[in-house]
Image 1 (cartoon, rainbow, N blue to C red):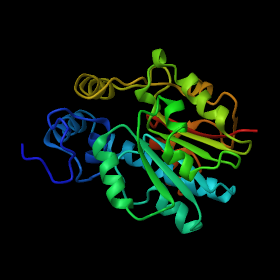
Image 2 (image 1 turned 60 degrees about the vertical axis):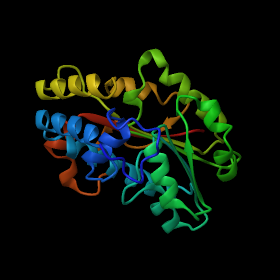
Image 3 (image 1 turned 180 degrees about the vertical axis):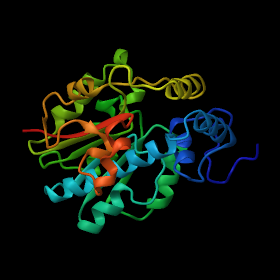
Image 4 (image 1 turned 45 degrees about the horizontal axis):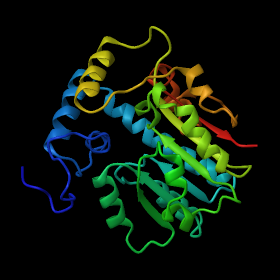
Amino acid sequence: MERPNWAPGDIDLERPSVARVYDYWLGGAHNFAADRAVGQKTLETMPELRGVVLNHRAFLRRAVRYLLGRGVRQFLDLGSGIPTVGNVHEIALAADPEARVVYVDIDPVAVAHSRSLLNGNDQVSVLHADVRDAQGVLASAEVDKQLDFDEPVAVLMIALLHFVSDEEDPWGIIGEYRDRLAPGSFLAISHAGYEADEETQASRDARRIYDRDVTRMTLRDETELSRLFAGFALVEPGVVRVPAWHPESPADVEESGTRFPGFAAVGRKA
């Protein structure tokens, strides 16, 4: 395979990545044949998956607008992925040119493309790091440059934590970020999952493909997602299906919204 000029030289073109498969589902161009192959195979098994991914992105935009309305002007976007239209900095800077954003991702393509897109924007930094290393992220030069932890910060974990197993202690990881935050800060999470006996056979088949070819996922239900907000007070309406969190249209919470395969919530640190 010919290496695109935007791909860092140490990338394994034959190994799919979370960020690039996600980019393919969103209709992006920064993915390789291996990413497209597994992305298409899962779509053939579970055709509604593209709509699921788009709903997580829509929640991100609604959450950022909500947080801007609560006076937040600093955003730490963990597992930010490859930039798409309507990303955090576009929404935040349109509301306040002094807003600040740090994007964090482990995928070199996501980081390289983000840095290229944001070159010259002093209000936004991009950090190549594993978000599970909270202390490393928080001690980074990029975070130090942009974020003042004496003021409220919004930590965003959008479609991220289903890639963190229970053995990797997502509660402890979140706690390390939480403990650095000032009162009045927020945590926003969207997460893949179902209640008991809801998962379809198509979903199970698609997940087996993804687990085998990309990385393992850990689905969590409403109660398990609520536990991730320890130390935060959930804002209304609490933990709900992703389309049902502050929906822009009543159509978002019809049948597809009430049985959507994932949950979302925002919490505030007192």
